[in-house]
Image (cartoon, rainbow, N blue to C red; front, top):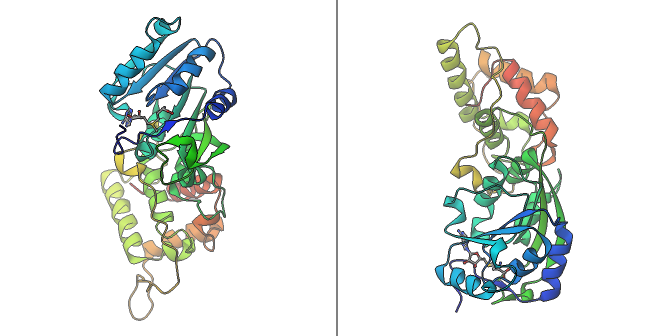
Length: 322
Ligand code: SAM
């Protein structure tokens, strides 16, 4: 019997398994990381294609079944099974990751892999279709969201294969897609906290103009607080851009966005008094948007590079998001 809570849906179509392995571009010298090997249908083909397979499996019964399956075969000494939760396991070196994962760990697993050093060559992963479409979305697509931009900051993602639910036993409630994720080499360096704070604001309402998002009282208040803190800490260098550090995502970054569609009926609370007076700081923020040409733009249509440019304009003018 299979554990639903562990996302146990076994690939039962051997042609599909072959196709995944073939599209992975595995070399005979590759160390392969497999996550959630289950009963080993994919593992077997990975062992035939690569040099070694390291498989991380949470379920002790599956680990036993896997070991029994390969015991006494020529493959057994090239398979290492680690029993545990992949999210809590320190990952070893690997060249390539190939996996049919439990969908509930999609987001944290993706960022865990992308954080892993040294960066691997590529990861070929089965995701729920909608999650996959979010990863590969382009500006203007309905599913383009904060997850998309965060993933594309760290990697290039492409869609490989649509997989219907009937290829699994038991069949899941959703269709799936196999995606290829290639870490960017070299990595794009941004200040992680700045980037994260900035993107959260931009995607708070992805279909609103940035001009209207950055006019919100709550946003101005937050940025002004950051501004004053920095001024107080270091008046001389508050205008300077922060040094870059390596991106480190925290747990809450791994959630998918809530892309509430903006129906335009929401009241906008703006800064300023009844006479329409605009604070000096608010003017400073809006000036950055105006001179960089982003005031009328919407996050749902912005490219990664445009987000990077706008953040750097804000930082240059001393406006910070962390
Ligand atoms: N790879 C197999 C196949 O394609 O037939 C099984 C895939 S099944 C969708 C997911 C597998 O991941 C199950 O064997 C499950 O026990 C395992 N699993 C679930 N959560 C896990 C976790 N946090 N860490 C490691 N393995 C996990």
